[in-house]
Image 1 (cartoon, rainbow, N blue to C red):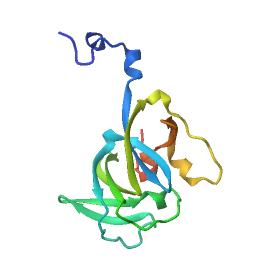
Image 2 (cartoon, helix red, strand yellow):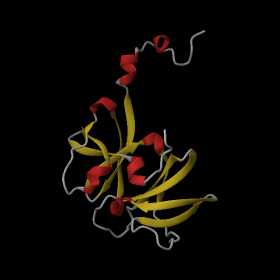
Image 3 (cartoon, rainbow, N blue to C red):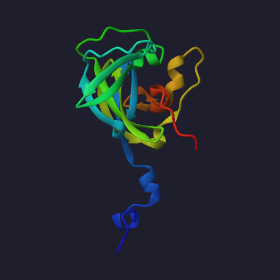
Image 4 (cartoon, rainbow, N blue to C red):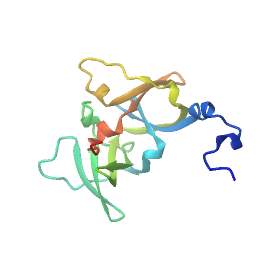
Length: 167
């Protein structure tokens, strides 16, 4: 009986699997386009008022209740050092499934607007350029050119300030 990971039965080699396209959700911040793996996205919500937390970082918007779970919301624009922006009808909150210190949790991120869902192979992602005085590049995992657009691959661990377990 073949195992579930037996790619030969599906007519694919391990080389073919490495080149399979992955799906990414793209969104904009100050006319720059960013992408995150769509598998990390739990849901997308319209902006709603939050409960502020005293002494929070400037980029920490506050907390919202999502079906009984208290979810922290951050403003990604402020987090990566871009100019502040008033929230409008295009402003959305992307809810991400994340793992921090061995626990599953949800983290919300405010972005200007959603732009697309795209597919491309991981091999097409190039290393992020190291640009001086560009705080936003410290949160980039890489960049990809897609349909004539330059898309920055967001490093969720760094952008969300997730504390990982020591290995």
